[in-house]
Structure formats: structure tokens, C-alpha cells
Image (cartoon, rainbow, N blue to C red; front, side, top):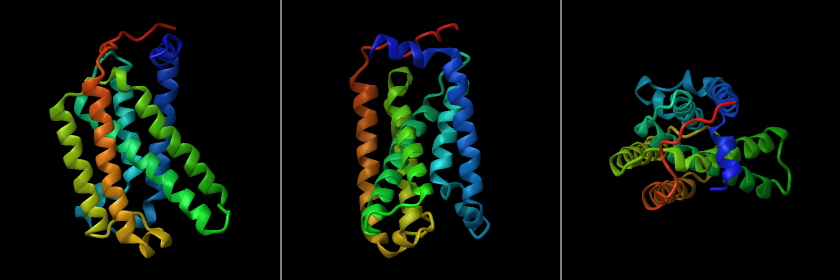
Amino acid sequence: MNAFISYILKNRLFLLVLFLVNLAGSIYGYIWYTPQLVQTEPLYLIFVPDSPTASLFFTIFLGFYLFGKNVPYIEALAYVTLVKYGLWAVVMNGLTFIDQGGYLPATGYMLIFSHGAMALQAVLYAPFYRIKLRHLAFAGIWTLHNDVIDYVFEQMPVYPSIMEHMNSIGYFTFWLSIGCLALAYVTTQKSRSTSLHSHIDSL
């Protein structure tokens, strides 16, 4: 990783700002899901708000990292789910743009930008995670189980376009999960040249 980028990513002020941005985004996401959550059976509640939960995992990672600590299970969940749901939202809004003949509401562009940033931040912090195979296995079980809940038990986000193409999107989402797990494996298990326990740079 470029030394300047590494310096920025470890800078305490930058970490604090990123923590607050992700926390605010998680809260906003849960509020956005409220209409669906109030109609969801309690058994499925934890699996419905996918993106807010992914950013919450990352927020928890940042909170611990600010104090020089690692939480590998949370890091694995954050990495895999942030990349997965970040890319998922970008692709879905891109397909909506095409389906609507080149039109997308302002919220669609906001979702593309914010979810693209979600995926990017997860990848950028890969050198600082302390993920091992058991943590990735846990994240894999969580992620694939969530796909079953979403597309077999039909607890996915309520978008008309998703309901119309649920089987195709469910198939795409499954392989997206596999791809994100593979990415996490390659970048955290195969590439270990950067220290995983670097100290946070002081301001």
C-alpha cells in the first residue's frame, strides 16, 4: 500500500471522522428500513437491513481500531458484507438506470455513491484486519445464510424491480457473496506483507 494512503488510513482524526460517518449512515439506514421492519416477523429482523448492518460492523471495527484493538470476527463480517452490499446496490441502481431509459432519481445516485464508498473503504482497510480462516468461515456462513433468508424466505429489500426479477437477482447475489468471500480470502490470507497490527499515527 502507498505510504501516504497508509498514513491517512491510520490517522486518528481521519478514523474518527470515518467512524462518525459510518455511524450516521448506519442509523439513517435503519430508519430507511423502518417501514419494512415494522412488518417483519421478529425472527427475521436482524437479516432485513443488510447495508446498515454491514456499515455497523465496520463502525464497530473502527471504534476498536481507534484504541489499537482488533475484533477479527467483526472485521470479517464488515469486509465481506460491505463489499457485497456496496457492489449490490451499485449494480441494482445501474440496472434500474438502464431499465428506466437513462433515468435515475437523486436518491439512486446517492445510493450509488454511498454504497460504492462502503465497498471501497472495506477494501482499503484490508491490510489492517487480523482475519484468519475461522473468521472468514463465520462470515461466509452469516452471508450465505442471509441470502437464503432474503431470497428463499423473501425477506429482501422491498423494491418493485427486485420482486419482478427475484430469482435472477437471488442467483446473482449468491455468486456475489462467493466472490466477496474469495476477495477477502485473497487479500487477508494470501497477502500479508503489510503489518496487521500497525499503531495508529498520532495527529
